Image (cartoon, rainbow, N blue to C red; front, side, top):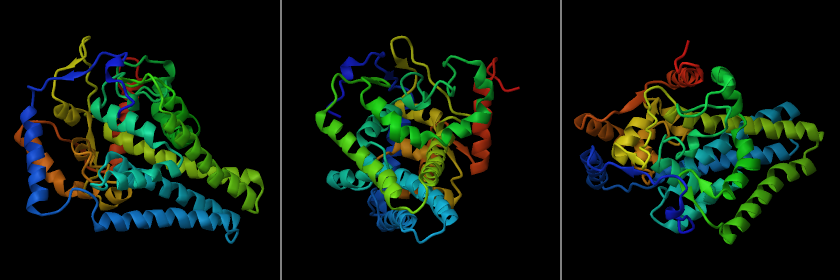
Length: 372
């Protein structure tokens, strides 16, 4: 990203110990590359991924059109709003996420165009590329450097964060806050992060004018499509329309938030603390294996719906590989981790991962750092 000043960061520059477990990273990349080479397949999107993209976009578009058609009963429209919210989350997790990572196509122009789907659902691809692709993927779970583990003060998701009395209840109220995630994203978070000089470990001196224009253009487009048009054309009182809008966001926000939480804020993952000089006593690849966990990898439905992000270990090691390939390369990654005595964290089931996340929140909220 040319608009990020790496040297101007106000936090200590993080360095990783390349001498530790460096052979694991070389070996796992070599083995995965060999898999694609031997099978003569691209690591980018294939026909199945294209079909999946079309189905998700059609589901998203059709639910929207049916809602504003006035052909459905109010309760039917409400149910469609919930379904639409889930399709919106699927666009972010399956399509926009891959495209912005550059894993959808080898052609950067195609990735940019497909990545616009992120903006159509109310988010901003520029901010996401910085805060997620660069900051989160480089400094995963490192306190004060990974912004994804510092959402709001009401949630204590890492051990160095100040403990408040209310945190002892966070395992109860957290799920309600997750439902507000996409609403915050659409109306607050993108604006704050866009004009925030410090984003995790990176400090930006200026904000590109082109991106400022894109931010406000796509936000206005989103508000027009999903608020103004429904209020003008749907033959219902405006409070009902807003209820449907908020309900769709509750589903979308919870879906997106919980997928991240189950990958990083879960039992077994660690939160590496660098030295005062910014040195982390492990290699970058080894850090990913300590801070990231898979879940429900044998559940094909979870894998399909959530963009393969239940294979979060594979995603962090190979963010430029399309998620459609994660199930195939996971056995390679796991075996390589075993060969190099590197952790390979995973929760067997979706519900088991949720239970583990609840216990982790409870631990971080306990005065002594342990659940009671």
